[in-house]
Image (tube, rainbow, N blue to C red; front, side):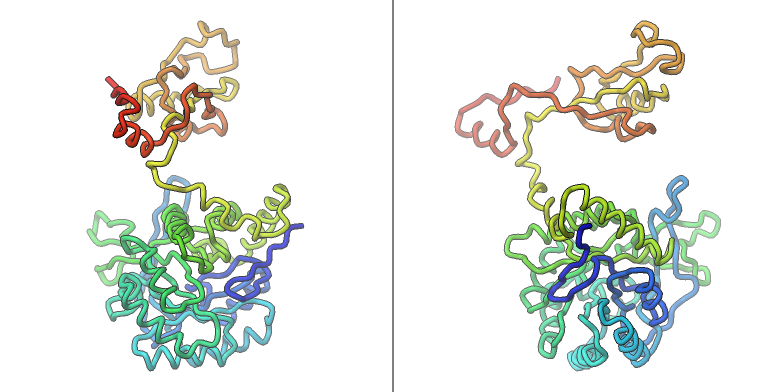
Length: 436
């Protein structure tokens, strides 16, 4: 069985799955429940000067039958006294010495950063996470994403923290920025031991068309919130890769953003995460989801012959590059398995109206298909000579593996756009004819 333990910035964790800073990590009671369920670590809900929250606080975007495809919140940091949080961290660490407990911090002045850092160390925290990501409420007070969007301010505050740091310092970055790697570089330049990303994305999930106020509703008004859940996973993966692939950036990364199952976890690991933080999925399904996450990841690693999680960390990073370096002469086409085709013709409609008009509707009788193989109506057929391999038909098809994208051997040598431009400039080839 593959070893799921990881070493994150010198912190040993029995598995890479950590509860992210948020509502599921608000109390010692919840931390104990998480560890009983099998989580490797807990990042405490952000500690700072106590705040007052509103009612209500959450909204969601549902997609078809999928509840909470995207989740929005206007909740702030911990509304409990710092003394209470630090006392409970100490109690949890005494009970679970082999698990990771990270104190998430947010404050303002150099003096307060020093104070919170020392108190985090004194209570037994394994590390601290500096919350530079909250996009609402706290940023209006000069904290949260107001810090994370300014690399100079990041460098200054991390520098303050490092003056007194005796345990690893993780910097949590905001996605509400043009390029997250500049913020990551600032954290590294100031001496941070690791980064985590992404925090939530500025969002409004819906507008009530009767009241003309968005949700969550607070006395007839609302505000933008932080977006998370499965819908943000593609954005999180992109920003994770942006940092992991940045030349010279070699800090460990804790991946956050839409992780809901072992496949999500494996993808984050492959793109450079060493640990994985989960919040929305816990709020939706409870702490016990970690059982399936650990079992699924372990089975996947075993199937690949991997001895440990570290065998796949960063494996996908070199396979993501700039568009200009992709092979223009690579060819794939769509092929339909008529034993699985149900004749819905969604592929035809999508290709005809939204892509490249290379699917025809044909009479199944004339195609030689026997009775009962497909519905008794016209069925789609791909004209491979005209297919550009865009994948749209396979994506809209409601039947798994009914449409495969098949690679065709090309007689042409691989050539990228960058190489094409160079050969044109050197006079080694004629321009590629445009489509009529």
